[in-house]
Length: 120
Image: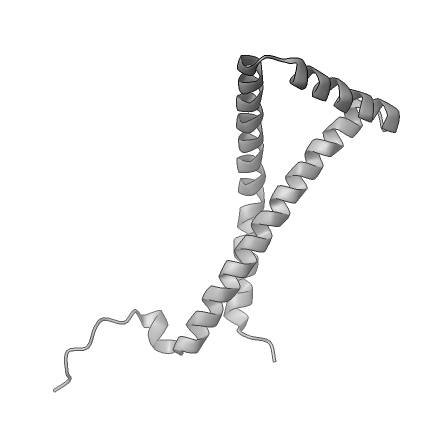
């Protein structure tokens, strides 16, 4: 007669505990690097948008940034808050779309790498 053991999912029965910990650490590092990389790419898209608006001219690019900054500094608190609110919403929507487009490929790559196991 077998003693009453706690339920262990089938996946964990096949994998040693060391492998599960290594996979969890790998997932945490890969997910954080993927997230940071996507956010940096999204910020790069914002800079690219300003470059497209300025037709690639650096002087016009900095002129647009100066105009935006001077109007922000001169605005009252209500308008600043409204601008910040619109900026956060716009950036959040762009981030969700950006992440949603890139997520399936990231998941496929992670599944493939985890199935292959550690490299010698």
